[in-house]
Length: 394
Image 1 (cartoon, rainbow, N blue to C red):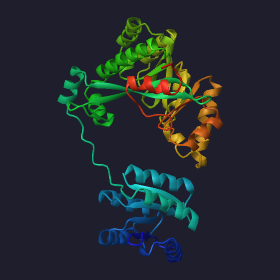
Image 2 (cartoon, one colour):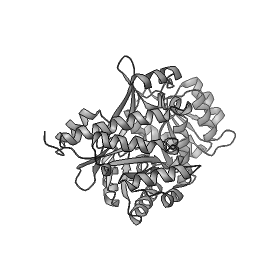
Image 3 (cartoon, one colour):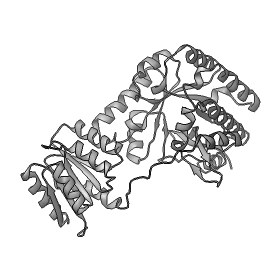
């Protein structure tokens, strides 16, 4: 730390001097200062600080514009946002910094105090190896078409467990792509190409078929759980999807009540006639319907009223930070309360910490999915995981 440099960008000299003294006491010997964003950029280019404390409201170039310029320079230093503004403005600024792919360590309200500053700086020491992620290279359209025809689509399954007793009650099927060398690449590298070139139906068909086949194999091994598969809005505009679902159920001999179709609510729906008929007919066959990423779209309430959903999935955005963020907690609580009033099963996705688990348990969420429970895994690994978890005999 003595060799590390920290830059304070703030137009208030009193705050700058006070913060410098606190940093010195915390062991930061090399403290640089700048009075606004323009000066901050000049110091950044000359000194390459390891951490920047940035005020938001400054004359000339304010903190938000300063963040944009840092992003253009692909800055990898840790950044702490500081302001006397409303707490929610600070939170939004932090989200903006993350959207710029900057290394946002946290945010602090003025006046800065030693204990919270030390805690945020502690995250820097844990993340000194941070570097901006390299731009993700998309697969070419030719590679995607070839991969679909050659069966390079893989399906991984992420466990969903009951909050009450941590028993495995279901999984979500997640698409993966296996390259010719055997390595897997993330959905972000191929889904945009699939969606933009009218190939989403073909991919959805393959994912669904493989998910139902895995479901049947688990059942033979003594593991009967619910399997959720994501369907795009585009797929729900073609009536052939009903035949796809029904034929797979009959061929594999699975219980339709153990199937869940997940629909991302932010993308439902411009022309409602076909999706409404398809989803309602699927529900009449006993198949569950889940409204995915709830709260992230503009028409959440309308879709809940319009479609016979059985499950509400609370987006990770409302789970992350809820144990310490009053606004996030309020949104999480309201989502859970709404689901209970409507008689829907609640699923919290993206749970990653013990604190998040305890909070959702306190709020009465039914099911949890996320890295705190388990990462997505191949079907054979899922069976082994269930055996270790005591959900099925080995």
